[in-house]
Image 1 (cartoon, one colour):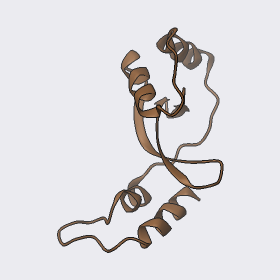
Image 2 (tube, one colour; image 1 turned 60 degrees about the horizontal axis):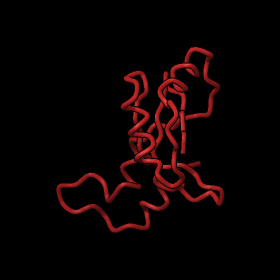
Image 3 (spheres, helix red, strand yellow; image 1 turned 135 degrees about the horizontal axis):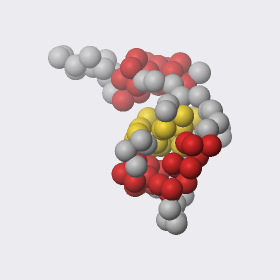
Image 4 (tube, one colour; image 1 turned 120 degrees about the horizontal axis):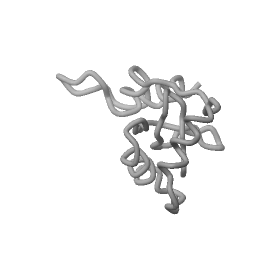
Length: 107
């Protein structure tokens, strides 16, 4: 669903300039992006995330900063940027971390 929406958005943009393969971020992510599914963390993964989170306050609407701080807290947490589908179904730029391919979002 998200890939299709991004491809539709990319289709509304002008073609890429000479020498470029993509006409923008929508196009690039639609072609190359990796989709994440929601999955439960194991007890060990949960403990790793909890320790990395510490006692920090995670601010709303600051997903990029939150994800960067969390990823820097433990090298088993991998930083990602891309799109998430908002409550009205429109893709929004977002950042999160993953552990063993599972999404962790503190925002």
